[in-house]
Amino acid sequence: MSPDSGAAVGTRVTVDAPPELAGWAGAATAIHAIQQMPMPVTLRLHVDGHGVITIDLAFNAYEWSRSLSDFSLTPDSVRVETEPGNPDTPSIDLPGRPLDPLLYAIGWRAFGDEPAPWLVDGHRYRLRRWPSLSELAIGLDEVRMIAMLGNAFATADELAAAAQIPPSDARRLVNALSVAGILRRTATAPALDAEAGSRGGAPASTGLFARLRKKWGR
Amino acid sequence: MEHIILFAGPMGAGKTTAIRSLSETPVISTEAANTDLATADKATTTVAMDYGEIGVTDEEKVRLYGIPGQRRFDFMWRILRDRAEGMVLLVHNDHPDPVNAMREYLIEFADLCQRGGVAIGITRMDVRPGPILTDYTDVLERERPDLMVPVLPVDPRDRGNMEMLLMSLIANIEMRGSYGRVFA
Amino acid sequence: MTVMATRPAVALHKDPFVQDLATTALHDLTDRCPRVRYATVLTEDGFEVDGVPAYEDDRLSSMSSSMQALSEAVARELALGPARCLIVAADAGHIIQLRIPGQQLVLAAVFELDEPLAEALGSCRFAAERFAAALASR
Image (cartoon, rainbow over all chains, first blue to last red; front, side, top):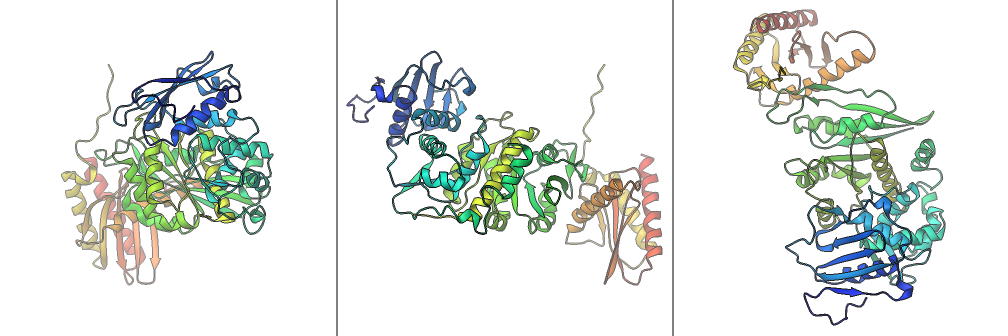
């Protein structure tokens, strides 16, 4: 989807994604592009076999008749429809459902183990705010990585090394947080010190977090 | 080794309930009859502290202290916050002004927030859906950009919810200690 | 038929009947113990019903409420039965407090150092028991 599609204001636009952006990749790319726009936009994601997800970015909410546990890992198609929103009038019945879990789930699945195409190699990322993901059954590895990105800039690979988890998981996390629209990026932050956790802090394997995790078998 | 985590927040937010959900031992509570029902429709209120604990190992405990919500007991806040490593702040969404209540507690416990960490649980979002979560996080981002704060909707009766909030707090405290805040 | 529990029309610490009896109890105490620096009747959740002499710092009610609850909790945890009284012995004076028997009320008094503890405690008990009896007659 291109922001420069030339569609007139007030026009609903449906976009067929190119093959490399099929499924959630197309939806994630559309969401990311729209998040860069100053004007409010409503998206409708027609998820093959799973109904329509209506997203009102201006009001940070969405509507969908299904549970996120019904979230299809690989839908056959996701058709993206957009229309200009209204900053004063929601396009869904408020309060709707909070966006973080939906956007996170889309971002996690959209690009497999690869970074999202808009993420620049060498740039580092940090959270603007903590994501609210109560609706999702995220694991404690993700919680720990989220905490790292809340307190330091890092690339996905630096995050993986510091958290002692596979790079693919770190890339998915960065993708997910980016689609959720809560990452800040920089080209100038120093490299994350992967050893910092072992010096006076709490290493992944031995801090209170790790000990509680072990106790609770998670 | 002990780790002290404070549970703070306005009266009725669910602090005592949250500690009961997490504690492995019977909670020692100091509930008194609420004689001022006009102010809060609640049969009892905490007047000193609640105490619960999680045994991490044979030699390590996480001690959970719940403080009274009313300001007339703020001397208890001062006694307990000096010993705490971190704080779980619970705010109920049907509070008359929940976002401002959050703000006031963050000011009151500024030192603890700065040196340790805070995680915020918004309770009773099923009772009153607004404010929405971004109403809280927007204020935090605007007024306290130095403070990375987990803000999660929680049901204090749900052990899973409370474990996630507690683990988010502990992860944040550890990462803050390891990496500080590196800004571009 | 369902019997609905009714909320009291007025908060306990604002109830004129309770206030009058509290005033009487406090005078009972100060008449017997002239070396009372300050005495108060408070609700168990920390609201002052009355205090003598008039006192600007109202923290004593809140602090006494906390101490009462903590002491009762400790006695309960140690299976010692109901806590009868709490005594704080400090360099410059003593605090004695005890629950008005059967009520959501506490009597707390700060005594000068030279007031013998046994007399202070006895006077507090006397005042508390008379207060309880008067409340029961309502």
